[in-house]
Length: 230
Image (tube, rainbow, N blue to C red; front, top):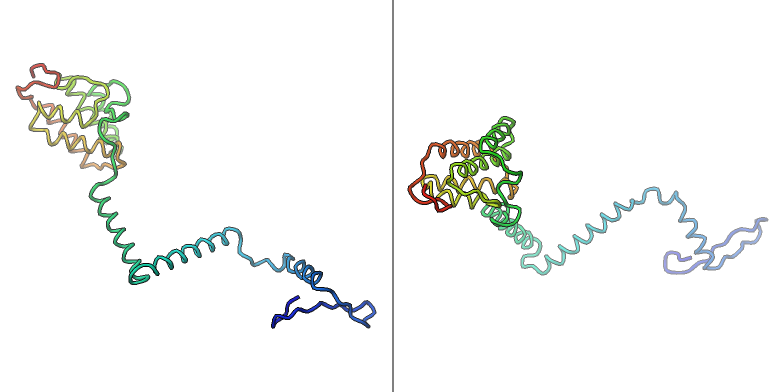
């Protein structure tokens, strides 16, 4: 076996009678040492598999940052500055664009997904959700009530697959004084339905007030989306 200084020594064991030591060659000595070191008592404090994996991972991260900092002007500080700038740009884009929404008019974006119901039924459902503080569902049902009411008043033609954006654009032509509010309501509906946003009570109340105002508003003398006189 190897000892300090790089020399190789043989293991010797005393004879049973204690007189003459017995030499053991290098290979059997190494095997004996390996058997000895494989005993559990020598490995009680070794890190477990998870810890070893984490150690390897952090070593890899350290090597990666070391290589990147070496190739970046300013070293580690320059790399940190670049990372911060990238994160700031991502945050700014997220704040500006919001959660990505699906394009209006794609399959599955139909305003009415649960079969035909009257405007009164949608309003009742919206009131129940609002009373329970479920503002997303309240917004959805109130927007459906608005569109169904316009269909019942023949200001919109009943059309399967219509989206909230399409309904708002069509209704805005015969109710121009509420066109902007209709577009905003449709956007809130899309945000909570497809965009992962969360509505609050003020957002719901604005759509509720729009519903009430539309009920009291007479359409213009322009033709509706069906082409029939309003």
